[in-house]
Image (cartoon, rainbow, N blue to C red; front, side, top):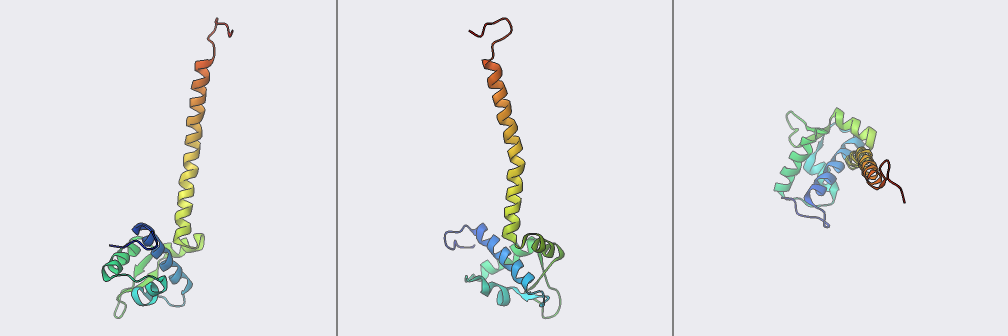
Amino acid sequence: MLKEKDNQAPDTIENDVIDHVVKILYNNTDEPEMDFEQDILPHFGHAFSAKDVKHLWAVVLATNLVDAAVGFGKSGKLYLTQPGMQMMKMYGGYMAYLEQQRNMQLLQAVPAIAQLAKLAQEQSTNQKAPSAGESAF
């Protein structure tokens, strides 16, 4: 499987490759399809084993941001899909998209955390407050 590069976990390398692939395809829209191994991976700056290339091919295709070209002489070529084009227009890359998703999850968690803190504070206040008929002294 993918070996760690510069202390990066394999899933981080996969995300970097996905980001790289969609950016290359987006920035080269004059070429409707590009060869994954010959045109895209060499620009990544990392040598991949044949097993890693097959794995990355499957990972990249699983995103539905790119698809494999079909037809004679198109083996190993990719093109940017409509969702891939939209993602690039909105976020400028896969890593930016992932960051936005993380931020959205955090924003959704903040109100829940604030509500829990408020409930804890109310319970604490209710336990400390004297009951009716009791003196506060």
